[in-house]
Length: 303
Image 1 (cartoon, helix red, strand yellow):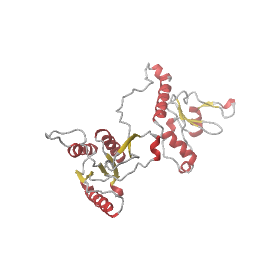
Image 2 (cartoon, rainbow, N blue to C red):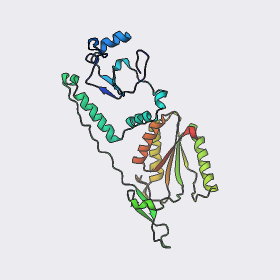
Image 3 (tube, rainbow, N blue to C red):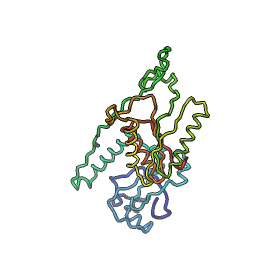
Image 4 (tube, helix red, strand yellow):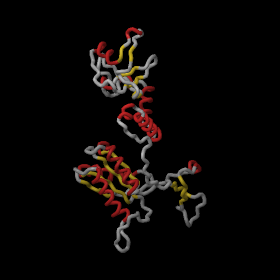
């Protein structure tokens, strides 16, 4: 939003690093009335531009693009008039939620623009144009387990594993009921009642409805009300090692899950005292990489 005149709201398309208020000229349709941006704003609005070499915001319009100094603008939310336009909102979402390759390209383009600027050359700065690469942990390709076509009385429950990218599995039934005998709820002390309520409801539904799914009462792992993300991580680690992995015949701690037909499941009740998107991201990544168990998250406000 412009901080001068009628305070109009604009959508900034890009930053023009090669333009500045000192060199930008307004001609007003008359060669004799030419003036730079500094003089124009001082005369028209009584506003003084202090930074004469700052880049300009470009606002694209049908007839002629508008250029404004960032010094005279302020960041605001999306006005109601713009929110009502589905086309504009779609463009905004596309620019905000870029796919990783697109975001990398945008960052590299910005780096090239900055590296080519006069200021960077004057200061003799060396800007690395290519981002550093870090080798991530590559998880195994997911498998879909489906019943084999030819079953016998000796192996009625035999399943065949096929990779997820096998297009033939799209024509087969891949869902089957799984019993929940080993599962846990992680929550703060103040949310224990929510955990007990979920335990009761899951058990009752498994008894009342004919889903062919048995849900036993899950363990409730109770954390202090002052617990943060790290405390949740430690509780998940402790439970995973103690109950999912367990110990061998010599009492030694195992680090991999014991082979069992039981399905392990973690349910995390997210408290309103912790920013939920941060908690979800941290714990979901933690469980997927270090404690590979099916997990689900629920907000305490929605129970």
